[in-house]
Figure 1 (cartoon, one colour):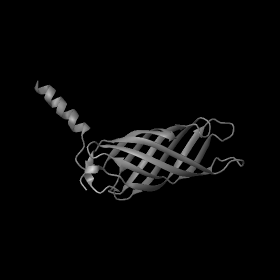
Figure 2: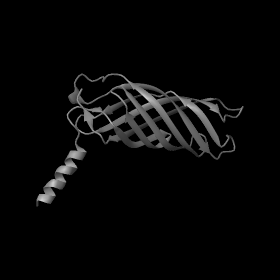
Figure 3: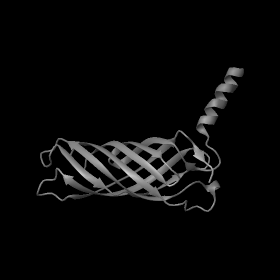
Figure 4: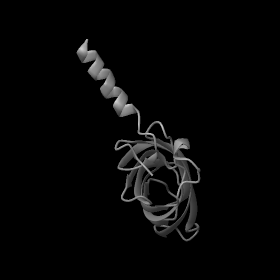
Length: 166
């Protein structure tokens, strides 16, 4: 019986965050859009994070996409930390897209400028995000194609290190 109680408490402590939802530590989740795949975010300070993604895109034919960004966040748009944490963010980063398409070279490298927002729940360490990302390919673009391309995704992340008090 004691083993069941300890197990239940351990599971509850993993699944329930603290009362305030400013994320910290490592977030891992899924994103859908362009690209679709895995999303990783590591908070390095109260307003700065590094994110990365590994995904699959159909935008340029079938292609594997990697990206990494540095993100700067505003303060939460919500008045009370009991309502969660909702910052806007802007960032800069890079991407590599590797595919097998006769219209494009095998690899393209570009610059990303993500704009987005992320809502982190007050009661659980889960964040929902939405971002729009203008991209500018610097290599691997055929002369007949444009260097500019949009990306964007929606997704969620589970923050393993929980949240911290504001």
